[in-house]
Image 1: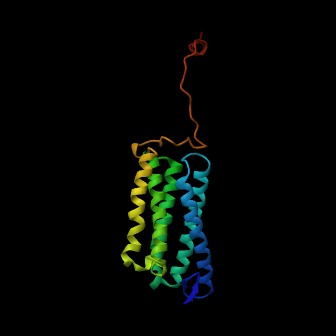
Image 2 (image 1 turned 90 degrees about the vertical axis):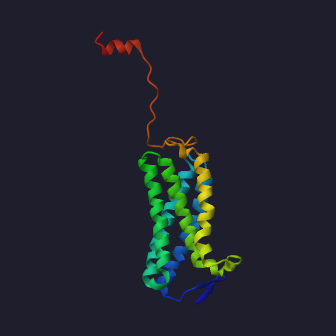
Image 3 (image 1 turned 45 degrees about the vertical axis):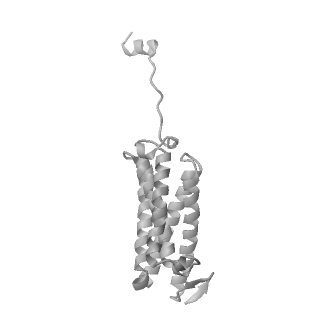
Length: 197
């Protein structure tokens, strides 16, 4: 083991260290982008841009976790599973936003928030024992605390944005590629033309 920024870094060869460097960068990017997306108004602009960055970051975290787990499976298999959940939920959130099934906003918000919680869980499970204050907690806390905070915050946000009422959230603007039709108005001249007058 070697030390980097106060954290133990495994000596597992250059491929592991390269994957770890990308993993840490993607993880930090995902945490920042996820926070920006969550704090932004749910309309075109900052929210979808930050969400796209988060999706790519979660994908990079998953890819690098796969490489690192393959090199140290017995020690890192659980981190691979957490990264798989984080990326899978991010993809589900992206799909819900793109395809808009019934109650899509609740699916989108819940999946993206769940992905963010999983990302933080992976960080704390792997690094909690080395962090100040966190090192005093039992190991089970690293698994449960992110969800214990994230679930009520997500519930409140979904209620505030109207996502739990079904349909489009109250504060959401229409998607850029969705055409919103205006209410139809009766016009005597057009009606006469259609009737053959």
